[in-house]
Image 1 (tube, rainbow, N blue to C red):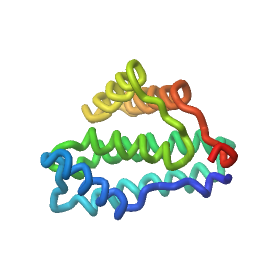
Image 2 (cartoon, helix red, strand yellow):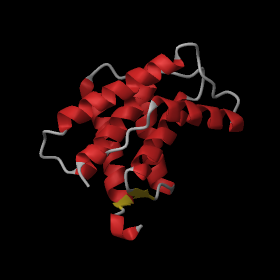
Image 3 (tube, rainbow, N blue to C red):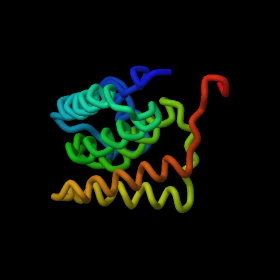
Length: 153
């Protein structure tokens, strides 16, 4: 499977996710510019992935970076009235899962994910802080997941 096979959730999928999450928690609801912000987030990830296509990174590394970038963009752009961190975390984990990562996030791993998400939500001013949080997320993925090959299906 090539890096081009990477699945980045389209805006329509993200809107459906918001609707589904709203059924469980009414505080999670779109704002007037939600679709525009989601389009901006997806475009940023697609641009980054197109750049990474030329790199020597493995598909798994590109998936982890793209999922982290999407998480960061969704937190940064704040597309919802409330529940942005929860939404971004769900999208992050689902993006990893859809792209072949079997994720076991519980206990310490879950705390590590939430800590990184909260740090990103504080809108760090220095790129080093963003990079550190994204590296932590990548480490969680590396330590607490395995890549599912086509043969495992």
